Amino acid sequence: QQKGQVLPKQPELRVLHHKISGYVGFANLPKQWHRKSIRRGFSLNLLCVGQGGLGKSTLINTLFNKQLYDLEGKPTEDLAALKLEDSENLSESLERPQGEEQPSVKIETISTDIEENGVKLALTVVDAPGFGDAIDNTDSWVPIVREIDSRFDQYLDAENRIDRDVIQDHRIHACLYFIEPTGHCLAPLDLEFCKAVHQKCNLIPVIAKSDILTDEEIEQFKHTIKTQLDNAGVELFEPPQYSLDDKDTVARCAALCTRMPFAVVGSTSEVSTPDGRRVRGRSYPWGVIEVDNESHSDFVHLRDLLIRLYLMELREKTENVLFERYRSEKLMSLGIKQDNSVFKEYDPELKQKEEKQLHEAKLAKLEAEMKAVFQQKVNEKEKKLQKSEAELFARHKEMKDKLLKQLKALEDKKHQLEMSYANQSANSPAQTKKKGFLR
Ligand code: GDP
Image 1 (cartoon, rainbow, N blue to C red):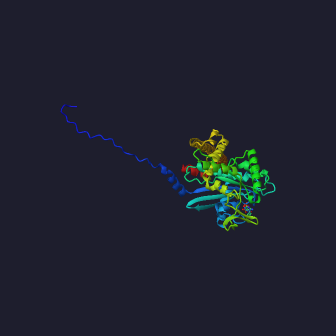
Image 2 (image 1 turned 90 degrees about the vertical axis):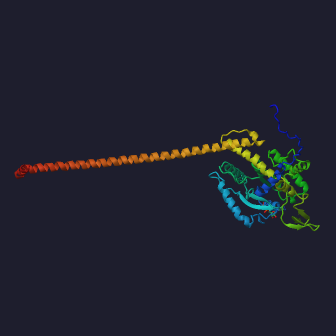
Image 3 (image 1 turned 180 degrees about the vertical axis):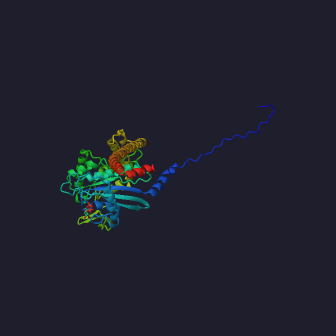
């Protein structure tokens, strides 16, 4: 600082106490998510399996409060066209091993959009008419398992495409398995089916037409079924519990789990109760069974599990556990090894790695196929060239022979002419003279 230099006056320092608003805005994220979800809509692909006449179509109509199936269990008229279209597509995607008989179990699909308070649900119901209806039902679950697998394959293929903006999810999110209300125990076919699918889809068993059993019979039947399924190592869908869940949620979840298999009653008809109410239910000489009354059947609990409370969990488990398992098994069958801990915890990085491996394996397969086709084409071309070379050679030889013959003939002619000319000259002196003169 130089002497005498006047410093500019420093502004007076003040400490500003400014209160920053605590609201940043990310608390609004659920609203954004909500808006987005409403715009996109939701989807549920439901597989219904059970013998004919167990009330499958009635229960579906009751669950979604929509007449998807008519009284005969056939898709209603406006859905019939859709059903046909879908089943055609599916039959194309199902690769039946050569020589295998046409199965008595068919796969039929219906799709419809349902809207409730502005929320759209794209519902697909996959039915397997013919299941358990034959005299010999051995392996009648095979076409159903194949259907579940083909839907996984479809999704896997779509994921590996370059353009994967809009992937249609046709994977089965839940399987309702209808158990005959015998009150005794599960039939061998029931166990076979459950064992075959429990690792591939969220299995939810239901005791069909439970109104024909008493409460005690239902309790006993449920106990027997659970024991049988446990002994067979069959896993049923259980709603997940999170550490942040409140007490009520935990209790509700536990109650749902203990009620499985759900003893259900279905009906879309309205009947009058003795106290004059109009309810969905079934009327009997001894009284009315109310579908939406939780003390009459487990229907309400099934609807809670399937739609009201855990639809998103069903979808998430399909995506993160069941499909991941299928993908890993597929990769392993292609010879790619992987850490099985992926089943326990979802790891996006690992998923990406697997996707890459799967893609590379596919590329390698494609390359090998292309090489084989190329080699085949080269071989064919070579054979063709060799053939035409031989033909050309034969033609050349033939021409050469012909020319040699012609040459020989000409030489003979020349020789003859020379001879006749020599003869003529010897016989005619005048000619010779003339020639001598001309020379
Ligand atoms: P699906 O062949 O499995 O689709 O069976 P349906 O839904 O067509 O039902 C066959 C018959 O069972 C129909 O007469 C229904 O009215 C009847 N039904 C459906 N649900 C129930 C039920 O919960 N209890 C009783 N008792 N009958 C039912």
